[in-house]
Length: 237
Ligand code: ADE
Image (cartoon, rainbow, N blue to C red; front, side, top):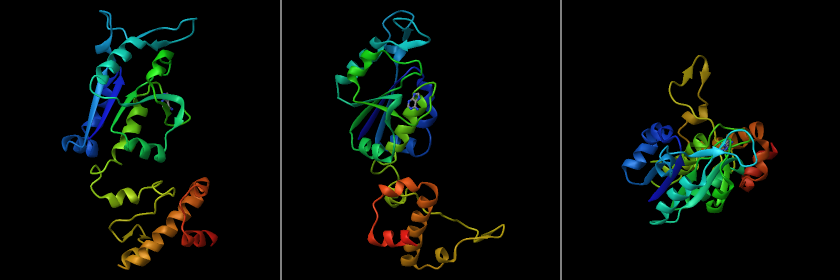
């Protein structure tokens, strides 16, 4: 069982995510649990304040440490999750990072805010994580992206494990093109090989297309990709 805790001031943001598609199915099947924690519920004053002004001056408001620590201590009574905080300068999230996280039993994601979080919160954080070099107004969309990418790697979540192996990035290459019916659409034909029923040939064609796609669209990925002898020969063409 994988458990996710999300600390946020916008728990409603996650409702659609939790109640839709493969995520909702994984929850219903008991494969994962998602616990969204409203930081306001852990505020210490009667106005349920979660943010405050910056010491030393400066624009915006920071998330206060007390609600975050109180919510964290509540979780620590039962378990010790791996703690992430979303930050634009964090470690860049990618498929390898998602694979790493999919091995953890329990993950806590603290949704940062663009103005920031009191620095003392970092004392409970294992890693700061960024979903790319751009600035979001809050960490919620980042937390959602991270959870989605991790959840689909958990065994039993995606019905057909072959489809995980066919994913772009799963072996460092982009995916191959796919087609469904009709065989001809607006004059565009499904490649003959894919309709041939020759599985060996289809496998070779797909690998060739993966390499071609990667070379055309993301050539820098080829340096790190796991390539076989045959792959290298294909690359030389
Ligand atoms: N918070 C603001 N921008 C972010 C980003 N790009 N990734 C993760 N968290 C963020």
